[in-house]
Amino acid sequence: QGRLVESGGGLVQPGGSLRLSCTLSGSIRPINAMRWYRQAPGKEREFVAGIISAGNIKYADSVKGRFTISRDNAKNTGYLQMNNLKSEDTAVYYCDARVGSVWWSESGSWGQGTQVTVSS
Image (cartoon, rainbow, N blue to C red; front, side, top):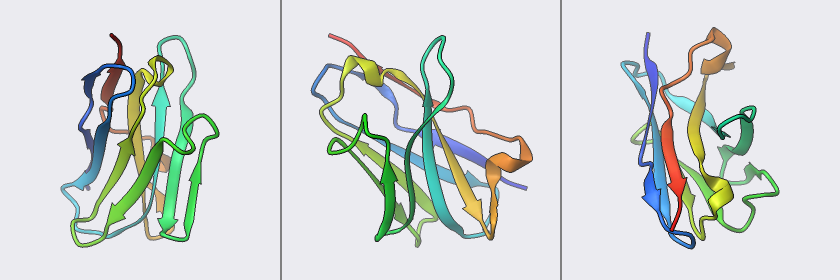
């Protein structure tokens, strides 16, 4: 069946960097697109970045120029490189993966997320 697994979060000072990873554990089905979302305390989940291919990438305005989304097809893993982190980036980060034509979240199943805290 598989489940989304995010990792790489942590506590970082403003201006620091983190790289988040996302895999589809328990499934060998290839991921062909990925999105990252985040949810801060008291706020709704928001879109951060999405990738279908190297030429088809979108970012939320708030992270443009600081975050980079990528995929490694060989590892069936996606990444979110986050640079120049700000306090307002503090949130739980979730990924969503598309297998075939279906996004994993459409099944109602999200991963546990990974906490990113930006604080001095």
